[in-house]
Image (cartoon, rainbow, N blue to C red; front, side, top):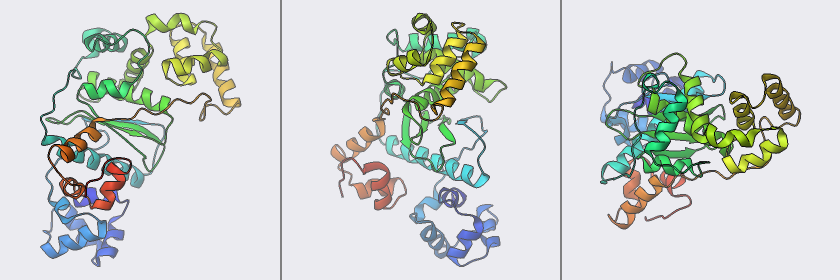
Length: 339
C-alpha cells in the first residue's frame, strides 16, 4: 500500500524519501516488506502522501497491467512512471468503490456472462448472445453505461493523467466488474472502448494472442449490429458517416471501418476515406459531438449512505481512505455534500 499510495501521487522513492526525511533505501525496504514501519514512520509517510495513515494498512489486492484480471485499451506507449500512476489511480478507485458498495445489499437485474469465443465460433456471435441475454432492443445502444451498471458493473469516469489510455477494466475474484473511463477522450471513443472492455471480461479469462482484435470485433458488433446497420452504410462517405454518428453514437472512423469490415466498401475506399478524415483534421477531433454518458451507480450508492444510513461526507471519506477535500473533489463536487 505504501507503493500504491506513492505511485498514485506520481512520486518516486527518492521524492518520497526526501519529503519524509529518510533515505531512498529505507523506503525501498519498507515497500518490499524488508523493514517494518513504526507508527511514527507510518504517520510521516502518510502525511507526505496526503493520505490518512489507515490507508497504509489496507489488505486489498492490487492488480496491474498484463494480469489476468486487468485489461487496458492503450493508444500508444507511455513512460513507466505515468503507467504506474494510472495503475495506482485505478486500483484506488476500484478499492474505494468496493468499500462503498460492500456495506449495501445490491441487487441487479442482469449479469455480465462468461462466453468463450471457441464456444460461440466468433466474437460477433458472442456479442449477439450478450445482447440477447440482456434482451436489448434492436438497433443502436442508447446508453451503454446504463446497461453495464444494470448488470452489476461499476463504471467510473475520471480524467487520467494522460489521454493515451482510453479505458481500463478489472474483475477480481469476489468483486464487481470494474470499468474506468478516461474523460479526456471523446464520448464516442469511450463508448467503443467501454464495449471493448466488456468484450474482454465476457470472452477472456486469461490474456491470449489476438484478444485485442477479438474485443474490437465484439465491440463493433455489440454497438453496430451487422443486420441492422449494413444497409445504412451503403454509399459510405464523410457526409453519411457524420449523419450516422449521432444515431449509432460511434465515431465516424468506426463507422467507416465497419463499412469495410462488412464489405460495403473496399479496402481502397476505406483508405481513401481515412485519408480524407486526416486531411480535414478529423482523426482526433471529429465534427458532430455526442455527450458523454454519465455513470450513476456510485453516485446512487453514496446517496443511499447519506440519506438512508446517515453517513456524513467525512464518514465516507474515512471509509475510502481520503481526506474530505479530496473526497469532495473526486466524488461530490457536483452532488450532495453532508459534512
